[in-house]
Length: 505
Image (cartoon, rainbow, N blue to C red; front, side, top):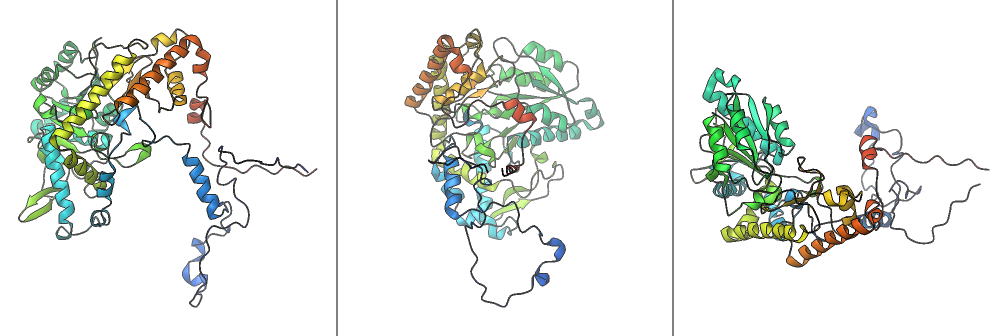
């Protein structure tokens, strides 16, 4: 018989909970019945009962469970441990106060079908947040229904479609082209396509700006419904010709949708409505304190001009009489896009964030986000290729061009950064930049940590020249080393299967 190798010490390379299972172990026992036992046949029909005696479910004690998941949790990188150079896209530090507000019992336990009379506090939260977002964006029409960024984006494009159909009637069928810059987020063309538009690409200039001549040429055909633009754009630069861009599209009869993913660089300083933008979505989980990392809930409010307001989703929360009410009487609305009124817990966090900061605090947060990105830009320009020379906003893009001469690419640099204790930056996006490394520190990182990050990146640049193999084989300090991520994505193992016991000798 084969004797299993003895384990002489605790290993942090934790086995699966299934592999820790031992027959007969139990973490919880129900108390003895103190009433007459009812036959199971009278409680649950036979066709609804399991007949495998829970075979395959792990049998573990309570300490087994606690220690297993605690050990696994130590593998995780988290916002309480350090900075995320990939920025507000998923994780920046948000005050615990906002989490406490979201857990106030009267809000957290309020049933979504409660009557207007019993939900006045919640309706006031929604209404007040709408007012603040209208002021921040310069766009008076607000819906908090969309569940996250891409959902808010699609809602905005649907509003454009409904408005054009109402304005142009049958002639609107000729206006079915949505213009999207080549640096756009991938969700932009998806939202346009789902809303019935054909996508045409607007090229960027070598300086990373929207090419105005290309835009004018595309708008001359008479079939343009609108333009979907991110500002600052996805290479981290403010579109300095934004007013002219909006004028060109408006003169062609189209509307301008702005992707609000990068509002972390504008809040308190510039309002999209003042630039000529017609509709925008916001990411409350990027800019206004909703933790979205790891797949948590988001919120993507849609803001628009007064002219587009009748087309916003229903119901709308409005002020009425002595309180607030839910208004379904919006005949031109695109309809409901999410159950109830959106992700209400996210609204609470965002309102707490806005009220805590106030006008000056929001402006200061924007200043810090932009300053941090520019400090990194200045600190790394000597070691990494920077494709655009204009001062970046809240994020800066570099490439692996210099390191590539030694066979070190962007993925290698990102993996090596893990060994230095930092989460990797966004890599290979935007797509128009070869070997892109997009670094967004956000406002929640202090000078000391920014400097540590810069020094880590510079050390990796030196390693790429002096010992490229060290970088190419990173990470070296993690529980699991370099993975074949392409194979994992194409051939995922989604179900655990127990190993067959070896035959006895």
